[in-house]
Length: 83
Image 1 (cartoon, rainbow, N blue to C red):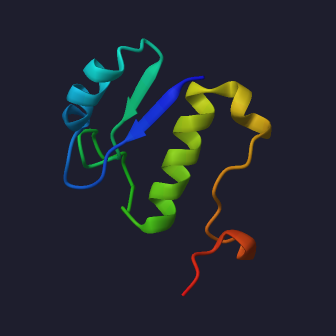
Image 2 (cartoon, helix red, strand yellow):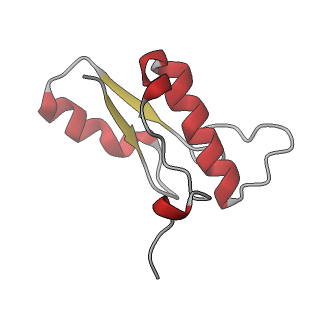
Image 3 (cartoon, one colour):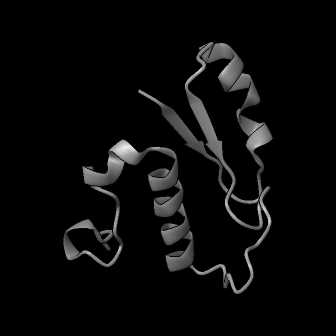
C-alpha cells in the first residue's frame, strides 16, 4: 500500500527525506500544499476548505483506487472535530 506524506506549514517535502531513507520503500508519495513547496494556483485563497479540497483531489488523482474509500470531509457532522 502506498504511503502518502503531507508536511505541515511552513515546511517543505524535504522534511520527509530522512524518514523516506529509513523506511527504504519505493511506494512513498510526498505532497506539498500550495504555497508551501508548491506554487499557489490562480485564485487559490488558502482557506481551510481549499486545502482540504486540494488534498482530496491530490489523493484522488494519484490513487484512483481510493475513489470508494472514505475521505475526510470537515462539513460532514460525523467527521467534524469535537470541541
